[in-house]
Length: 413
Image (spheres, rainbow, N blue to C red):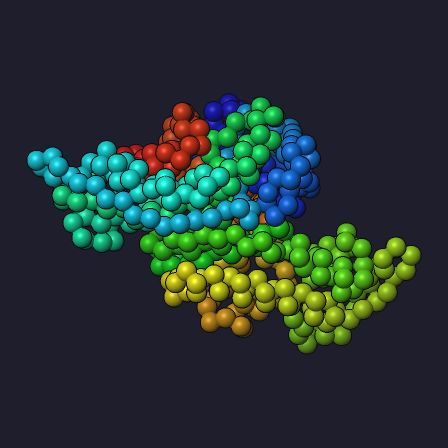
């Protein structure tokens, strides 16, 4: 298989590294290789040990290479962490030509203006700049201004930033493996391509990607991302709570969470008991599963409360009539969907693998792989991957490539 036919998504998470190799055929993706390794050297999505992180990435990439029988030389890499921030901004330009027709160059100019570099926090850099809407001569809600006539063009953009040190350290890990970065992609943005429908994005929806170290939030409205936030609390915190609450070793607590973790007790499991190894591993005790639920439920409540408080503070609580979609490994927790539906006045569902994923589909159906699958779909749906099956060259992950990729959807259709 020719490497030019392939795209690679690399999910660099706090608890796991996943590399997916996809073969792009028309508008569908065939998964032909997968590699996974425990993530070491990251804390809440941020590299804290370059050597360990590099080793973890190497293992996952090597497994994917062997399965797909290819050499991976570039990836779409997910990025998250407590260092991620966002801001919304506007830019304005005049259309001075005689026919007043808005062209591609005008859109480039107004987005460049909206970047407002002076507003970027010190020691930070942009990861994405995403147009939310355009305004032509005070007419709002325009998604594609090209070809319209007007004398004044405004752009409302969503800008995602990350700490320069965090971005550079992640880049260094990949560079040391001779792996290029096609683009760094905000992980909830990537996951949205895997688990959200276009109708949900248009009407308004919240994505909650609950991983090991972070809970990544993204609100979509009118087809684009309007709000993003990374919460430094997720599945690892539940594991730590179980360790303390049940007085069991950390690795045993993780196994208990995965196999028996539940948010609340119903009639079917109210009398169930589970075996728990004690600290030191010399004894095994049996405890009611309701004791486990009492440990897990407060942390789930905290995650949901923090999430909706962030939406309230940002003024987006009423912008999600489609409800909430959960992804990430912690979304598999028994009862978490029912808990959310019971305590919050919005519909909540667990995300699933899109229909246009083939090949090793049965392997990646779990929401655990939402980000890595989403990275592959992002490469196609953002039009960084050309229709003839060859990657667009020279885009290299720079912020301006987001603009060109966005513009591309109007000139390649």
